[in-house]
Amino acid sequence: MGKSVALVRGDDRRANVRRALDLIGDELNALRSARRVLIKPNLTATKVRHANTHPDAVRGVLDFCAGFLDDFDQTQFTILEGSGSAYYERCSTHDVYAAFGYRELAREYRNLTLRALEDYQEFTELGVRSIAGSESVGLVNCLRDFDYRISLALPKTHNYAIASLGIKNMMGLLRQCDKSVIHGLRTPSAPRAKTVFSYIPTAWIAWARRRVPRLVNALFAHSVAYQRAVQVIHHNVVTVAREAWPDLVVIDAWEGMEGDGPVDGDRIEARAAIASTDAVKADGICARLMGFEPAEIGYLYYLQQEGRGSYSVEGLRGEKIPTVAKRFRPHPNYSVQRQWAGSEQSHTQCHRG
Image (cartoon, rainbow, N blue to C red):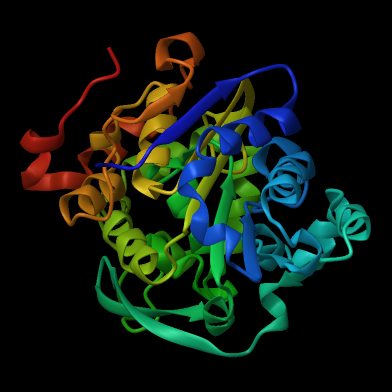
């Protein structure tokens, strides 16, 4: 029998997260026996609150654990993140923790520790693709130290991969300088491969996205390199996800981001939460909540094909999707992003209606 997925809607973000976990409590026995628990938030932005996991979502997870675990006080929870925007803006994930209320959160719970990717020097190399050939990225070794991994994400549109959800959230554990490599356009092993990054530093592109987004999106949409990169990224997410697989995905959909995600888009409110020990199922339900079909998101399609999970609606507990659904405006380059499948497109082509 397949795993369940919870979908709740309510007027309190923190309570929504706890209620979603309550609904699947019978499938969380592995969490009950864990002593070192990773909570991986999404803190990609340095200034935009609705781009980042809210501390109250973490509180909702800990509220549930306090009532669920017999020895909650003896369980060590670690929040670990590597903020991509912090890296490109020459600051630190610790600065992001300070700016978004995570230091106060850590003071509330004596068994909660904040760690930043910048604190670590040891990484395992994983082979990934670029538009020019093979590359490698580093996945932080300390991931192996945890008994249980929780991806605590929020729903956002994405400028390459259509949507950023619970599985893609785990890409934040890649070495900071490799965040752009995963997208396929930065090609350290093939310096003569011509992409936008050959001419303009990543930090400058991020700066331009915030000030002239229409121009940047138009330039990317007409770039052959970008058209190839939107195919590459889905394979790379799958490669990293196999090694950084979350035991539990919790999506705080109280609010999310539409349009120019995952950093520069607009806030959209859904007042929902999703939880499942099947990461593909959690992301699939969230995709539907946003108005996408799971099969049009390449990494979800590939992961279901290889048996990592199922994005079917079987096992849905709580609310029905139509009562919660909130149609997110896709990224302006969505029509290009949907071509990720190439010759496989006939098998996965879906429409938003």
